[in-house]
Length: 407
Image (cartoon, rainbow, N blue to C red; front, top):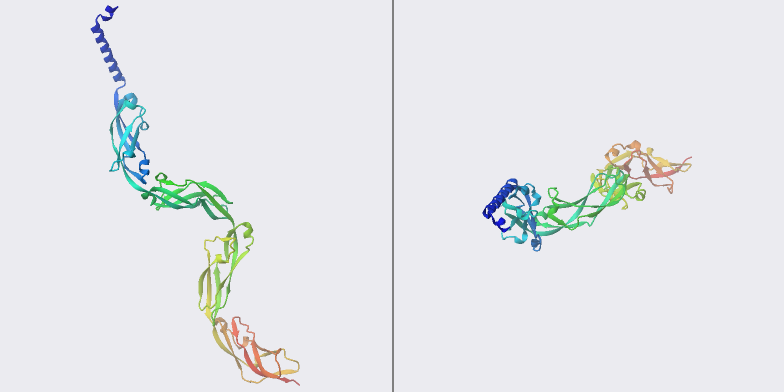
């Protein structure tokens, strides 16, 4: 048996060697080693707590993605994808020039794939101070509520939010906004909503660049019913001596208010006054309509003021002559006649606006004496006037008279 195994041993060894070589050739021909290129592999930063502890944040300057060239068997390389590679940069290995080595591995195939080249070998970063600032939460409604209703108040809970991030990022923040859809709403409601952060250009900022103390807010939208009511304004007081007002106008004549139905029912109209005390010239002014409104309802007009226009003119004086024969006698006792002690015409001073003064004359001042309280048979009697022209003041005139018996 031994002789059979050892007979032609050299030829047998040679045959085995040739067979092995043929096997290697076949294997290499069937599954040869090839080179593959993979682009855009993201680099993950690890151990971020290394700079969190010193109140710093980082921004990637370069090396966020890499391209690599690998070598391995065709059967492996052809089945690889970008997701099979893991590229990392370790912040614990940050150099004094703020650079980190980018390490690439292929866990799925361990030692079966060789990385022979990569486009970037280091990631470079910049460091910034980590800051925290507080911002108000602004609520913006979207859509239209039901007609006849008004949004009186919008509240966020909490109403402030703290935002942490790089100083360059936080300095760009203009506002924190929570959007609420109010389409068709006809009663007060509360929802939970997430905030959005906008910069000074009105551009939505990347939430991954910052950390918010709250990511959800309870938003309450309070609705009231509305009502249109008339506005009545009147003047009070008097202009300066020697002046009077000609006309008075104001706008608007109607305003819209909001409140609960019970409170709205208590407000049939709104009244107010405007003082012209001591005025010597035309008035153009505005008054706050809210000053005339019950605090249980609110004014919801876009214009909160009423425009006031008052024309003020100086009074003019005029002297009117009239004969005693034009004076009527009232309450004259039976069997008595009035005899005027002065025969000449009398003069009365009239004052008023130009339009009224120009129209007043002897024929329309209507002088009279009322003897109801006259005592004795002679003395001074007061002449009164009943002018048919409005806006004229006629001063009293006295005239001596005597009562005589009529036979």
